[in-house]
Image 1 (cartoon, rainbow, N blue to C red):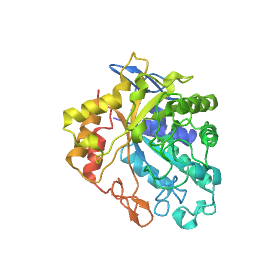
Image 2 (image 1 turned 60 degrees about the vertical axis):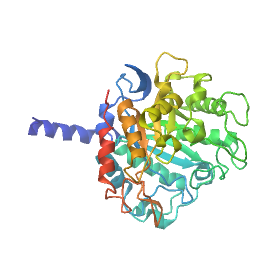
Image 3 (image 1 turned 90 degrees about the horizontal axis):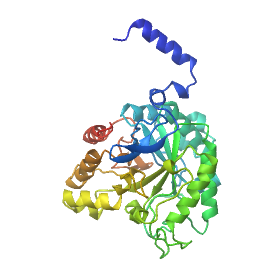
Image 4 (image 1 turned 180 degrees about the vertical axis):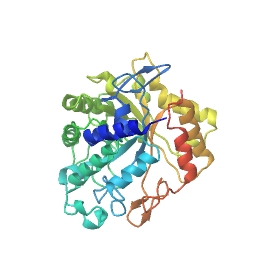
Length: 379
């Protein structure tokens, strides 16, 4: 039992600490994060070697035309951060676009009307405030370069399937990644960066893995960018997605990513109920995802690294969705649900969203219950 004296001591001590360090999450996790073998798999661990399971949720909007996370016209940043934390998530995947970073326009006042102190601020100033608000709540952040030109992702017709475009060549992509790494290097809860979202065909060219073609070899580009990011901030996790919309990491078997700080590597895959994989009977579904994605967790191999399912989501509690949840539970994988958002753009409902459009009310209680079941370390 906690005594009144103990409680008074706790609050007294808390008031003496910097705001960011006062969170429960940061007191229980020793930063920076890295990876290591525990049991039969490679996982994310803290600086003391204890497993740190990333049970995350995506909060999007900043990568789209408004250049700002959704919901700031409904609730304050601190309120949304508190809601996310109270739902049990310990981390946020926070997408951004290269256009947002380089153009840095002033955000429309209507998009931040619940946060009047942000009126007149630029996209990156609002992004900074978002990062600060989330980490003040003790939430870990994984930054994600989602796209180059701001907008919804993803298709093979949007021209965004590779890591570069005509308007944003590779050197600008790398400049943005390294600048973001440096920008938040003083905040230990900004713990990783997902280098690029859902590699896929663009302008008739499909990404390859390990063939040495500078125009298509995603593994070569990711390795180069990851090492340059680590030169700036060696404490960041470097998250590298597979090809085929992040559905395929098989190239890592023969051409594993070689980072200057190998333990900072995390491979990332995605999975959705509308993908063909999810139509398979569960034993075949499980085998396919292990063959194409989660095999990387096997220790003692040249490709061994931690794994994180950076996107998965649903609006229906159907059989295809159940296979994904069952697999995440059985495999005890780290993950990031898509998404917390109550709307995709103002006035457009987000049916996969954890929250409704008021950014307070839970949309599907059954969904939150399912996610809470896979948040703890299960093995």
